[in-house]
Length: 278
Length: 278
Image (cartoon, rainbow over all chains, first blue to last red; front, side):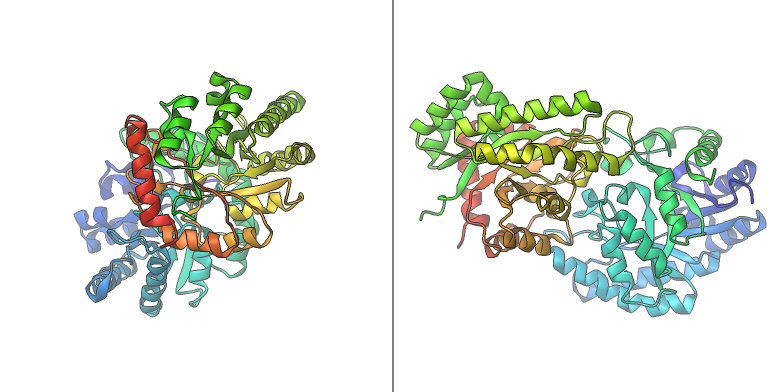
């Protein structure tokens, strides 16, 4: 097995690239898998995107993303279900076995955090059997607590597992994304729990760098540029039994403005230096 | 008991005011307590500051702040101990029974988060008996996880309690600061645990507002301006048995640029509307 055998490019990392460009970039860089984004897939068309990826010999590590389950009222819930069923269908068509779920923040004007969290559990319950039918796993992604109000009321790996464990492991898992969970004092224990239950659906990596930019969403760095101990975290994920893709997902304007080929070279270098088994 | 009987102004909220101005502001606004900052106290002199506050009839809810325990090496540790002993002595002179502890982030260039956390426990062990001698309690403040790398490796109330419970309750407690802990799915349980153990040394309030500013430290809002349910959180703290000060601590350039009298009027209004028992 080569040192990049488990490496995947999450497409947001090369945001300026179209899907065909990202596929070609992966092939040229020797990266065997790609995490797709629905907006990029839509530009190309789902069937054409599936063919492009398949013909290039790439695996699809994840589809990003479903979720946003916290809109209030029957209409809010119905709209979320419809959209997520569409995402599940696309994932199946693309050959992705994992749909990343960013669950959504507080509804506008609401301060009812327990209510929003209960809503997530309720809609996951409606979606989970459909995920099973499609052969695609819903992967709940805990987001960093700084995104709790506006983006995801699921803030820790333990909380994501509490939700996932309400459903069969083949229907609902979790994402371990280094950026979102690295600070958690419970991280090692929760990674072990996730692994023991067969719940780790995706391992995503990027680094915590400072200062945070004015748009806090865009502060992520290349592996090795920040404060996260990737050797320790990767060991924990490995010991927990995870053998799947290691996906590099970076939101960062400066990296987006870098030529994609260069970003992929950096990605491979950092994978070898900080993540891949020595 | 009046509705503002437990209200305290943390001095950072009126950052442009000197200590004498803040003391006069509290008296004029009918706010019975103040949380002091060491830099402001130093401008006035400790003895003079103690006299000013005492003569005005104000209580001192906290002294901010000690901590920053993660500097490496024997010299780093010794410097931290010296500085914290000085802070404890000042607290005692000022009549403050609580020294707020911001424990410090990762040392420069370090990715060893477990190591930094162990270091905090080690130095707390050296400081705790001295705190007991001074009759001042070390109050460990978990900071929001977005400050984990640069400011405080203690990120949750549960983690702060794990540390505090290594020592007698009269020596080490915790701060419940709404801004830092509101997102935590374990919050209600950990507040109950803190109350049961007599560990709540301070309850600080300000709101989570968005977007985060370019300096993430300065994004806090007046109670009621953001996403936190203060009625629910205050009920939890109250049911847990806490009867102490409710201190308003806001880091926000716009609020700092507002005349102090106006800030205190807003503070009182919001306390009555969102925090004080109805």
